[in-house]
Image (cartoon, rainbow, N blue to C red; front, side, top):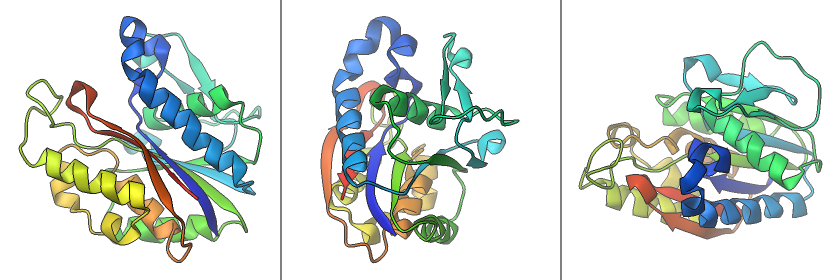
Length: 236
């Protein structure tokens, strides 16, 4: 059963070594993420599952001890998903590497941890099904859900400006802050793809996991630096 969830953005720029001289620009987002992870620790889960967007190479499950790297972003920095000496064949995709970095920052030892990388095109019904399966995996399950909003908020955004992006992000932020599983389920997957929303599938996995859990939510951070929607929320 799902007992808590934290929702965080997943840009590698969240890691100060990657952001370098611009690191201070995301201080507020980092602080909010750490606050959200504190909610997970207080929930005393039996199991923590990290969920984040992934390309073909990173889809599927990643065990505790899996390693990620920011070498692709010009930084010689490696992170490990929880404690352990596992030597998995695959590296963590960037979104899950950011999550592992956040967990290292908090010194996470509260419960065993594993990760699930989900593909951006994953249909809503399959996202919900995956979430239900995660929630049934232990008596007390917590989720750390990584994902960004639209990348089309400004002219300089990665996806250029799309006038539909602000409304989409506003509804996503409202749903995440209210722990509104129905609204997350109703997010338009086709529109999310057009707006380059990396978080749609992970958020809908969360919606499936939270069905019947009656969790309350709080939006801890909302902004669109670099023209990309970033949200932090805590559910408990």
